[in-house]
Structures are given as structure tokens and as C-alpha cells.
Image (cartoon, rainbow, N blue to C red; front, side, top):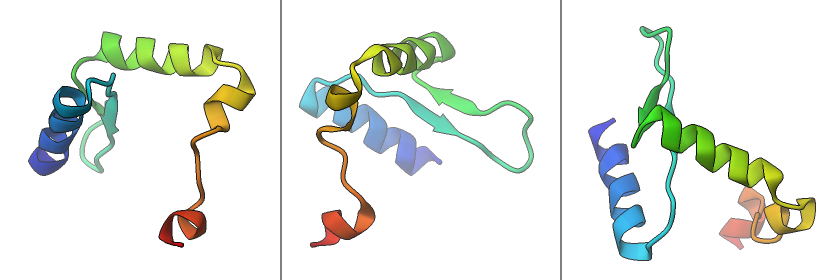
Length: 67
């Protein structure tokens, strides 16, 4: 988990982007959120409010990515 959180923080810093990380584990009822619940909630709200075309224009499937 620490490695993933470190990479999330590096992406945020190096790329100057907004990052929201949610990690679910088998032994906790609540997911771990990075950097905090409010930032994660706001990031997902902003994403959902984008027009569908803008939301999906940079998305690729795993097969497309590996090509």
C-alpha cells in the first residue's frame, strides 16, 4: 500500500494533476483514501460532472494500452 500511495503522491507532484486514490482491503470496513476523503469526493464529483465525451476521450482498454 505504501508504494501505491508514494506513486500517487509522485504523480500529483511531478505532473501537477489532481490525484484521488481509494484502496479497499479485506480487513477494514472503510476504504483508505489519499490524500483525504474530501479531496477524493470532490475529484470524483468533478469527473462525473464532465460531459461524457470529455470523460472518455483519454480512456483506453487494456488491449489498446498494450498495443
